[in-house]
Length: 270
Ligand code: NAP
Image 1 (tube, helix red, strand yellow):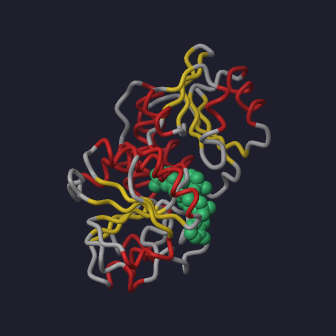
Image 2 (cartoon, protein in one colour; image 1 turned 45 degrees about the horizontal axis):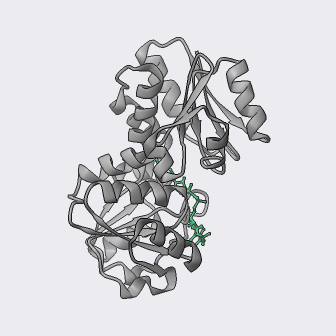
Image 3 (cartoon, protein in one colour; image 1 turned 180 degrees about the horizontal axis):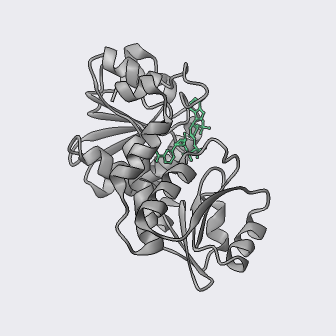
């Protein structure tokens, strides 16, 4: 069995580490391989030709890949992004497990129903977050650096929007960062100034490397409760394995494999 990651770049991804640990534990005779894709349609042909059973899709192909699949499920269609492809005898189906991963990890910590949730960003992960928040009965507000993109997304989802520079004027129950700001190796950066965070009782980051981003450290200092992207990452990956194999993935082991890879200092802050 071969499973793959399609993205560009892929070297930084911890998906191979997590998925290979899971396949080994599950006794599945297979390997998960990262591919730095240069030509997406040719890569998708290769997927059929090599009988690759399943693919994780990452930046920048989550939207473009939809054009090359046989089917896209309703959730991924509404979100407008596919992060998982299942290959059944050459027939390719696209799914999105990001939204499920995010919402599961959040619901372990806090209620979403009835809450006002600021979503920072307007890219693929923001759309997955929007889908999940609305499905759970939350009230999203989109905040993005490029105001026009926030407006377009807000019109599509019939919700309020604001530009990033006004984030300090907003109060909400939860703030979710879906931008890559603060991700390894640029850990010193944060998308929001520390003094603007006190208006959010919960601050969630989708970034998992580092485990505790500057945004989350600043949020703790401001008295907010915080959630790292690690559990979202593990849940979305576990859901991919379930889709590919119809078997229950070893989630605790997958989480530990990722944690072991992250720096010691961070493990201590768990
Ligand atoms: P994307 O589609 O490229 O969207 C990125 C968004 O971030 C855009 O709205 C962009 O704003 C904003 N942005 C980028 N740089 C910024 C900056 N310097 N200041 C302010 N805003 C900035 O990316 P994506 O696919 O949604 O991925 C975003 C992040 O989510 C990545 O770090 C990815 O690793 C992470 N992720 C984590 C998981 C997980 O399982 N934990 C799953 C999926 C994704 P503009 O519109 O102004 O350009």
